[in-house]
Length: 246
Ligand SMILES: Nc1ncnc2c1ncn2[C@@H]1O[C@H](COP(=O)(O)OP(=O)(O)O)[C@@H](O)[C@H]1O
Ligand SMILES: [Mg+2]
Image 1 (cartoon, rainbow, N blue to C red):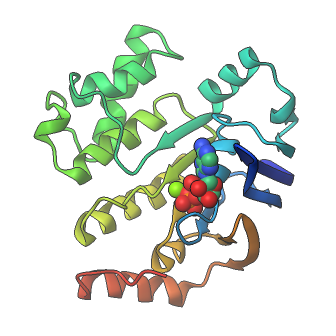
Image 2: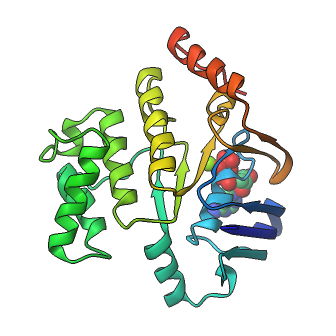
């Protein structure tokens, strides 16, 4: 078991009010699994992802990553945990605008590797995501889909065990969405990385090994992979201009 999440809650204090963003989430995620977290806006998806990535801490409950109890780590250990294990992919890419595609990825690769190794890792990853001819382009010279590819390469640069993607295709058209999702699925298999992808698009969730449905900060169901549903999703993506949203 890669991640064991028990009774995980996160609430925010807003003056007198306490907003329960996430309530008593219990779920186990296996190594290499592709998990989709599906839910409407405000259901706690980002909160859930940020807790797993340890960029936020729970109000209650525990997250265990292999034999590491994430919720009891010191600040220094948390930085180590994030640096070693977690790669993030965001809806708006979050690339450094003043750096080229190569430099954006290299910056991340250098965190855990020597300069020579970092250059090699960067080159290999940019080629793997299909940007072998775009090393020296700045983010502003790339399409949305290309920028997200750079962000994916950057997330993989430290060879993370967990890849967290928060609405990674939320800003892309259906063609780029299809390409990015295919790439993420391939990476999940090829790198055996545990992937947790957040979406409010039911079709996208059908690509995953398992879907966790969130509503009002709680799990109200899970479902297993269904090949027919995935195929249906790919058909919708190529025939309909807009994807149906829940
Ligand atoms: N920093 C914060 N301060 C106060 N409330 C927050 C904060 N972050 C999230 N929330 C609240 O927690 C709930 C879940 O938010 P979020 O995890 O961002 O949902 P989602 O990603 O599914 O849209 C929402 O009601 C949101 O308003
Ligand atoms: Mg969100």
